[in-house]
Structures are given as C-alpha cells and as structure tokens.
Image (tube, rainbow, N blue to C red):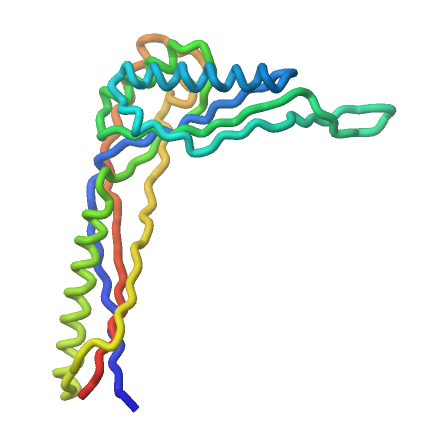
Length: 219
C-alpha cells in the first residue's frame, strides 16, 4: 500500500478595490399588464441612456433580474381578510460597474437626483480583474505547500516522491455594501444641489485567500 503525505497550503493577499458597483432596484405598479411593461421599458431605457451619456459602457450595465407578476394585496371583504389581485407590478435589478472614481459616482448621483423616476440603490466595491489576484494568491498557496512539505520531510527523515493528487478551488471574495450619509435620501427624494458632490468614498482592501491540498507519495 502506497504511503502518502497530505499537505494543505494557504495563500492570502490584500488588494485595494479598483471598481465601484452600483446596484439599482426599480419597481412599479399599474392596473394593466401592458402599462406596467411600458413603465418598466421607459425606466430602463431612460436609465440606460443617461448612464451612457456619462460615459458608462453598455457592457458594464447588466440586468441581473427582471420580473412582471400579479400585484397581490390584502383587503377586507365581508369582515374577512382576503388576498386579491390589484393590477401588475414589475421589478428590475441592474448592476453598473466602473473604475473607482468618486467624480463619476457623484455625476451618477446627480443624474438620479435630476431624474423623474424613483430608483433605490446600493454601492459596493470589487476588482476589475479578480482572476489576476486569485492566481497570485494561489501561487502563494503553492509556495506554502512546497515549504511545509520540505520542512516535514526533513524533520521526519522522509523522501518525497511524485505528487499523487492536487485539489484546489477558487474562492469568492466578499465586498462591503456601503450607503454613505445622504445617499439613501437622494435615492428616494430630491436633494439640494449642495448635497450632491459630497460623496467621497475611500477604496478598501479586499482579502483574497486560496487553498490547495497536495498529496505526495513517500518513497
């Protein structure tokens, strides 16, 4: 029976976020299906065109989800609560990404403030090229495995042979969702021009860690 030595390696790097992500949530209700569809189309196209005017590439404007469904409400009928249909509603979630740029962020907030329709949103951080940093973290994990294997084999007088198996996986990283003071107000109510342009976010570190498991044959 082959003797095996299993080594776990870890690699971790901290990277400054270089991309902003705005998540827009648009909703609407109307009596008729065609009307609510028209509302959603107008809001979507208005937002799309306004963002493009600000220099946002259409490829960086992604609809993550969209739905039109019956709008159900609770009403009191003959002394009993019943759920009935009251027209239709739509929901759309759009993600907009652009390089970390507070000036651009405030331009978008100003556009939202000047627009005629309501949209709620949140702000997040991410990386423009996460694969690059996942690879760097994985390289650190591989180096960690080599060092640990060398230390253990020397300590216990073992001679390692070929590699029997390798397991590893790319881990998703978490980003902070941030709503600075005043931004939530601007997403639902008109703000004064003095309130616009004050959002100044500071890029935060994103932690990327990778794990690798290597099994060596022992001679």
